[in-house]
Structures are given as structure tokens and as C-alpha cells.
Image (cartoon, rainbow, N blue to C red; front, side, top):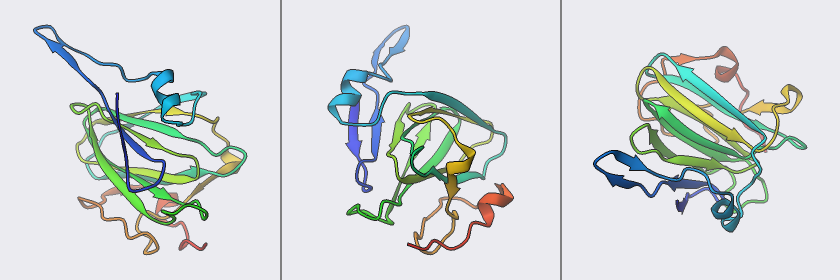
Length: 176
């Protein structure tokens, strides 16, 4: 596994080291040893999937507060997404900064979102599926969000948002 830290401190793009031959390929997508060496959150306590029928579907920007702050390992298993992480940790040197990567079924890349950061994605293709490995159980009482187009962050989305849940459209402006 190849780990590349993003502009958001503690967030990583994780690429596979594919071993290819005439049959196809084999690659490790999870190694507790390699994850531990990078000091990323584990263990995984929940896995989830998100299927998105339409191009231009936005999900996010979501996070959970203590004691249910969660780390997420996000991978696109079908289609393509633009995956975004925003640093909401006020003590972080990258506070209020964001970074994004394109995750596709073809590139097999995983994005690691550290606890204390918001996460969301925009589908670049219809029928995209996203697989999450999560380090804390979901708690609706601790679930929060920030608006995808909040000027406090200035996220640059690559295509027009066409499908979004009302809740995600109407989060108030971010306040420190």
C-alpha cells in the first residue's frame, strides 16, 4: 500500500500496489500492520455502502462529534466520485482547509478521513457505489454536517451538483 498525505493534516490517499499478470491483478487493500505504521485510526467497527444512481449526486459534508468521532476509509467500488475532506479541528495547522481526490473503481484508491474532519463526495458517473470502513459506530445524536458550498471553506466542485438531500443543502454557515 502506498500512503500519500493530503494537504489536510492526517488525511491520506492510499493507493494499492497491484501485482498484475495475464489473469488480472492482485492487491492488498487493508493491512492493520501498514495502517498502524502510519498511525491511522483503527480498528474498523462498521462498514457501509452508498449506491448513487445519478451523476452529480452530492452526499456530505458529514462528521460525528465526541465521543463518536470517526475515522473513515472511503473507496469507490463502482463508477467515479470526487471525494472531499475538510479539517474542522480547531487545533490543527490545516484548520478549515480542504483537499479532494478522484476515487474510481479503476484506480482502486482509498481516502482516509481522520476524526474531526467532515467528509463528502460528488458522483462523477451515474451508478457509482462507495464503500466505507468506519472506526466508530454511527450515532444520530452525534451526527453533524457543514454545507457543501459554505464560503468558510470554498470547496471547488468539478461538476454541477444536481441531486442533494435537503438537510445537506441547509446547514447554517460554519462558525468556529
